[in-house]
Figure (cartoon, rainbow, N blue to C red):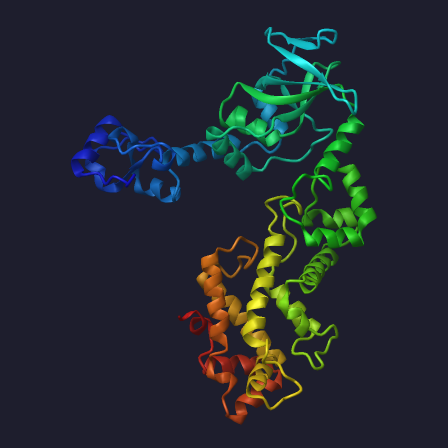
Length: 477
């Protein structure tokens, strides 16, 4: 269905029916109609219509932040930000839902395999064939849910809460929150699915939350299940963190000790000094080294055959030190706060992005062109100039600066710690190709060769500037 563009008469009708800004709620009228945008409340692709009742006026300043969202979703997102803003842990949620600490009432009848609650609702009991634990499925009143801090001490992620609440507004929930009923305390403690429970109870204002509840399991068993279920036995990993594999291989026992004292937690780089008993500087050095190793060892990294394992390149164009410097230039400097194996940690995306950039450079600068056995080959001479140490460092920085231009990044923003669209990759590939078209690489002037081979960074930088080899040149089509 095509979007409807409102006439002035129709805009006035919308304001008569809804004389306030849909986002901030402030009164609006025909007098300030020029300061308003008119948009669909419910998006067309989710059932909204072009009827005037589905339009609202919005201050242009309020409309600016919504981007591609519908007014309905954007307003709800703002509400959720306010609702969730002070909730750091699920404990904060439960205190808000049940400030008096009211206990759940129930009666368990194992003979009839049922549990009857104080509101006379019932649930059928099941028995786990492997553990003999009794459990049931039920929509638990939200006020009776408590936080299982002994098992799951992790905090709540604000963006995840907002996204879940909006998603569950229109879609069914794949799995329930998982809890344990402590019969001696009349408490139902949520140890898995705290974000879902928060999104449904506070975000979507549901009075009940779908739960799977185990009756009196041992704390030790629940801890073990949570750790193993979020570790090696996950049905599907969000990503395979090569960094975490490297760290685990080198610090297995230390990380295991940390995990034992932090059940259910995923470790982040910020927590590594404490976990490993090392200084912050040592950990930062290790993280960079492990990222570098994971890239050079990646079977998809085409530049690896051109990198020497020694400090000096020998017959290869790139020494290991040059390669390590290049990687460090491209990564987000540690530590990052997102847990390593979580969906919000983008180290693996960053690593794959860097591999792709290096592959572009390899294909354009090295493949079939680096021929040390034939040093007088024209292409080899050009490549030799590219990989003089100071020359290499200078153009590597220029490419990074050019990428920031096309990706609209600030100097302090991480370059590849993000998802990169295919459109941007096409432009990155073009930038890599553009570099070798510059005449500096085949300039017959002896001074050019002498300067590039001098390895004096300042002189090479000045030469590049004088020759017009800069980010703007690289970004031009």
